[in-house]
Image (cartoon, rainbow, N blue to C red; front, side):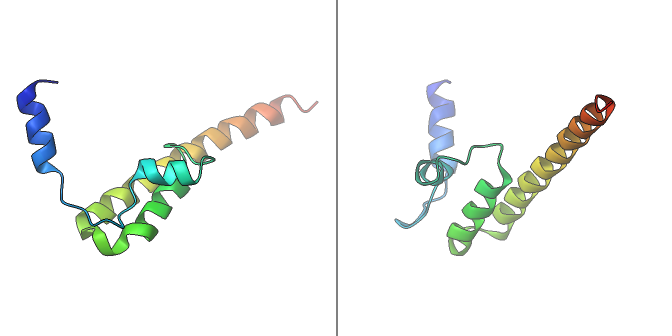
Length: 87
């Protein structure tokens, strides 16, 4: 990453209050959660609802939905595999 890209990234980050919990902080507090777990993002919204804009909340909800859809697809494939090998 170039210096200019790094500076732009830092400047584009909104200023967060001291009690804001980042995803990394939540993962540290709840090590069972990882970035592929929709519960992580639900906690993120719940802990930071007062500090997030509606656009940010909607973005996080889209991530939750995408992860739920992916889990459903994986579960369906696993069920089909297990049912195929029952007999």
